[in-house]
Each structure stands twice: as C-alpha cells, then as structure tokens.
Length: 197
Image (cartoon, rainbow, N blue to C red; front, side, top):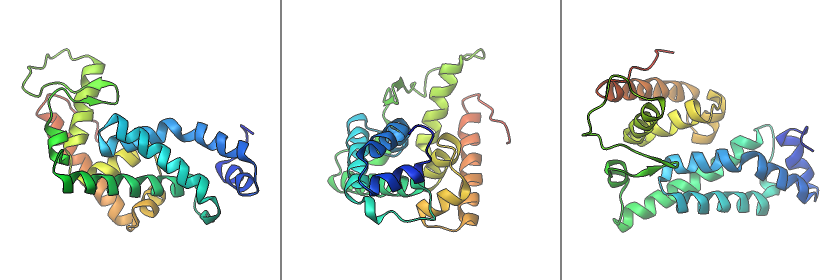
C-alpha cells in the first residue's frame, strides 16, 4: 500500500478499506500538524485541529472528488478549521494573534523563539538562524504568512495553494513575492540575508 498514490488510497478508503485511511494519516500527520501549528501557534490546539481534520476526512470521505489532489482537499479542511479557531480566539480576546506573535520565548515547533532584544553574533548558528526566520514568518500579516507556509515550508504548488485559499494563482504569486520581501526586510534587521530565489 506504500506505493499507492494519495488519490488511489482515498478511493480505496471510499470503497471501505480502512487500512488506506491509516496510510493517509501516516503520510500526512506530521506535515498537517506543522502546517496547523504555523497558523495557530499552540501545540495542543494544533494537535486537536489535526485530529479534527483527519476525523472530517474519515466522516466526509465521500465528499472528496477529483480532479483535485487529496492533499489539497485535506489542507483546505485543515485551513478552514484553523481559521475558525483563530476567530474564536480573537473573539474571546484571551490570546489574540498579535499577542501570540509578540510573546518572547514562545515555543515554536519545539524550538524557543529568541528574545528580539538579544544581541546577535556575527557567527550565528544555523539553529539560531532558523529560530529567527520562524519568528519572522510569525510576524507577517496572515495573508502573507499562510502562503509562505504553504509554498516555502509545505512546498505546495501555486495551483494547490490557489485551490485551498480560493484565490487566483496571480494573487497567490503576488502574496508570496510580497511576503518574501517583507520577511527579507524583517530578517535583514536581525543580520540574516535570504537568497533572492
């Protein structure tokens, strides 16, 4: 079953093969969690949302139809759940999106985000650079942050991102370019220079 495509697996699952569902979960659990964590910034919430996404995949399996890729359908479910959760957080005003971004020492994917007031050595370790880049992504506006996560971290195609976000491909490309430029500016202030690719 490892050699089957995602689309073949979901078809098998639609036909009653629950082993195919287990394989899909195994294929995507880490990537989905990382994606959701990038949006929600809370370990427990990202875990809950990943489980909820896979539950919806299980209970709504028959709503999947081609020609879209399985991953596009799954990420759309996850994105919608994450944005709904973000709106709830903002309404409760207990921990707004900007508060999460500004929290010093916040845990981001198992790594501590450094205090931005700390001096940075010229000889910065790769781990330290990674932390600062992650923090920079967190500081981007939501529209830019989500496309950077999809394209540069999840490595999704422009077409998949367009489908998931329900915006034209031109808008996706524009947001990615503007998001990368904003990220470059943020990181330049910290002494990190990204390639222009």
